Image 1: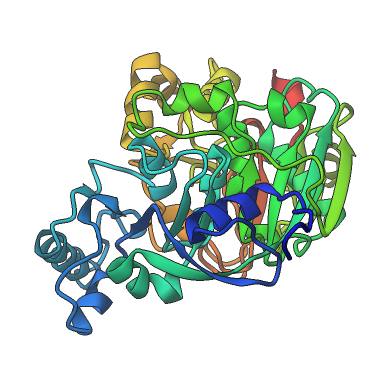
Image 2: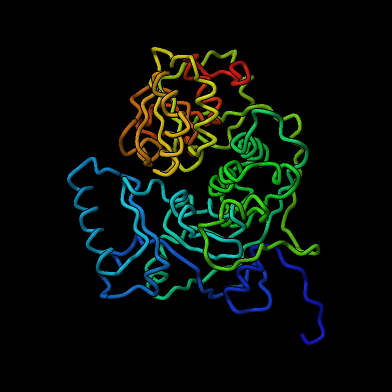
Length: 421
């Protein structure tokens, strides 16, 4: 009503309101919003409906990552058809395997995300983009509409504020943070919510570490998983984003459905027991169990960035992967692969006995390049440890940081990485 005071808004509410052309956005309200970009994974469906154009070819990003290179004739034919569709719809941002990597890394490297953006794309881990102070979410079922019209309806989510206090101890990283938070709050604290991560530890973490937390936003049910923007955000985006942007912060009087606080000063390296990312426990509590591992996987859109490869190389330098363990390494993008190559990290990993694969979703997705057999155990830097996620439903997957993965690869069993640092 006229003269009525306008309540403060959260980050997500501000971004949604701006993209709906509205002054405010209220949780539960339905809004049609213009999006800034999308992914092209539903181009075949668009064609099947007889739509002969996309709303903006420059704002559609496409990467081939799940079965790349194709392991079957069926997969190869899908890639062949995708190339045809890319040309038909004049998509300018296409990153085929060998030229890209995993989409959540590649899209960021090529300027898809910027603070204040609203982006709907086709993958469950699209919450990754929230690391750049943006609202990024999966819209697989509505992707055809987004491709054709550049807009999407949203039910404004309630917001949850997670305050990360203290000083993150040495050798604890973003993966340890999110496994700790999920272990205490469960994997539904963000269910259809916008989760805002703030506080001293949020500011302390590198972009790569924050990226891990945003990436696993969907593992706690989040619609968006957002960090505030700062100089670290700007440093990563410099030279990648060529459009103006402004950091978006919540108003001091913004209303949250829930607020949680964690003091992480005493955090220790974490692992998630098989079956659920919320099964997090300190790794030191697992060590007495002498959990043998058959495979150690350092990769995925969660933890395969340059600093992840660097810490693994530091641990493995001058050592060997245990003879009973196969270690797979898959950098998050070809650009990261190249940087790690120049820095000598990949050479160190190779000399230690790791198999360095190209940039792909393969082992994490469970499609190829490292599936697990019956009764095998894998310790993985990825985001999901559901039964059957990486192959046999009779196999076990433990989630951990790159440091814990590398240390366990040496030991042949799950160990505390601090013993090797």
